[in-house]
Image (tube, rainbow, N blue to C red; front, side, top):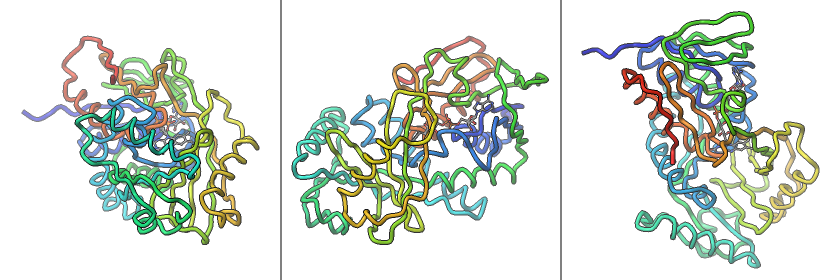
Length: 362
Ligand SMILES: Cc1cc2nc3c(=O)[nH]c(=O)nc-3n(C[C@H](O)[C@H](O)[C@H](O)COP(=O)(O)OP(=O)(O)OC[C@H]3O[C@@H](n4cnc5c(N)ncnc54)[C@H](O)[C@@H]3O)c2cc1C
C-alpha cells in the first residue's frame, strides 16, 4: 500500500527546520516552511556554530545517549552531504579526519583525565577510538602542533562548514516545491500555524523554532556562546584541534581560505549582545598559546548566539497528534540533527497513533 503524503508545516528554518524540510519534501510530502527572519541571513544558533560533529569530545561533558545519537548521525552525514552537493552543485566541506586534543605540559593531567573519563563512560563500547599520539605521530598529523609533546586523536570525528551547508539547504529547498515564508514569525498548535494576522491548517505541524519556542516549552533556556573567526596564512591546521586547559577550553576549526573558527564560551545567559572583551581576550590568548604565529592572525568576525537548551541539556522530541516539537539541541545541533531527523521521519510513518506521548531522549 502506498504511504500517505502529508501537508506539513515547519516553523523555524534553522538547522533542524531546513534539514527536515529537505528530507520530508524529497519523500514526497508537501512542505511549507515559516521563518521569522531571512534564510539568507539566519538568526538562529545554527549560523553561529562551529559545525563540529564530535561524539567523543562531547561525551566528556554529556551522558552516553548523546554519544549514541551522535554516532548514528555520523552514519548519515557523509551521504546527506554528498547528496546535497550533487543536488545543488555546491560544496559543504564535510570532512571526517578526526579531532586532535592537546594540553600544555603543565596541564598534562587534563589529557589523562579526558582519556580516563571517556574510557569509563564507553566501557565495552571503547573499541580503540582514542589514539594516544607522541610528539612524532602528533606532528605527522598536525605539523604546526610542534610545541606539544603528546595528544589524543579522536579519529572518527567529523565537521561540516555550516556557512556552506545552510545556504546549500536553502538552495535545495528553492529547487524543490517547498513553500517558504520568510520574515513570518509564527506560533504552533496541533495542525495549525498562527501568523500575526491569520491561522492556516495543516495535517502536521513541526515546531523547530529553537529559542523562539521558549513560551511553549517549559524550562527551555538559552546558553550564550561566543566565537571568533580569524584568518592567517602562518598557521595551517588540517582538522579541529581542542586545547584542554583547567580554565580556558578552546577549539580551533580550520575552514577554507585560511579561516579558523575559534570557540567557544559557554555562559548561562540569554544575552545576545556583542562578544565581551574578557571572552575575546581569553579565546585569543588560548589560541596564541597553541602557536605564537597566531599573534598576526586577523580577526574577521565575532559571533554571538544562544544555544537552545532544556533543563537537563538533553534534546527534546515531543509528539502529540498533529504536532511534533524538536528542540533543546544545545551544543550538539550538528552532532544530533540527522539522528533526530530520522526519528521524526519514523514518527511521521506512525501518524496513525493518536495517543499523546512525550519522548525524552534519555
Ligand atoms: C557558539 C556556538 C557554537 C556551536 N558549535 C556547535 C558545534 O560545533 N557542533 C554542534 O553540533 N552544535 C554546535 N552548536 C549548537 C547548534 O548551533 C544548535 O544546537 C543548533 O543550531 C540548534 O538548531 P535548531 O534548528 O534547533 O535551532 P536554531 O539553529 O536556533 O534555529 C531556529 C530557527 O527558528 C527561527 N525562529 C525563531 N522563532 C521563530 C518564530 N516565532 N517563527 C518562525 N521562525 C522562528 C529562528 O530565526 C531560527 O532560524 C553551537 C552553538 C553556538 C551558539
